[in-house]
Image (tube, rainbow, N blue to C red):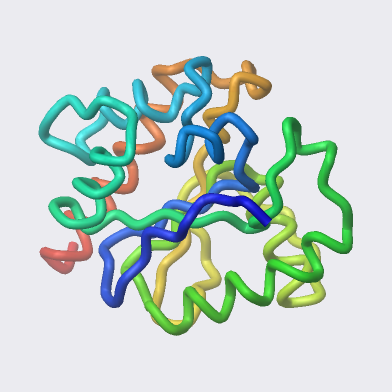
Amino acid sequence: MDTLPDYLKTDLKIVSIGLNPSPISVAAGYYFANPRNRFWPALNGSRLVSEQLQPGVEAMERLLNKYSIGFTDLVKRPTPMSNGLRAADYREWAPVLQEKLLRFHPGIVWFHGKVTYRNYLKYTDSREYDFPLGLQKPSIGRSRVFVTPNPSPANARYSLDDLIRSYNEIVTFQVREAFGL
């Protein structure tokens, strides 16, 4: 199966988790490659990075190596839209993601969208949760969990400013943790 590679290594500050790769991203070879996806503008507008990154494989490598931000997906099977995913996809891939997160133990596990996190929980904990956006109470191993709005163009409910604000909440949390606040 053609899919996106994981950008993972031990002790990352953050691991970004999308629902699943789009065929556009797989063809381009990097995450959030759809030009209408708002991830890159939100990232560049946030305090997560100190420079303007141009979407591409080089930016992925820079995020991994300079900023200690990794990337993977809940489901590795590409589909044009999320409605192309089946329960069997989540059953197969959620435990695989859980194993990766426990092995690499990033500081923060960053789920893009409530659907992504809800399906992770449903197929790893066998429970369903109602939860807000932002910092979550349950952790994954030693990793804290954040949920931000999905930057997909299909999720127009949230503006670019909303995305930037939610990305900045991750930075605020990191600073508080670093200084014990």
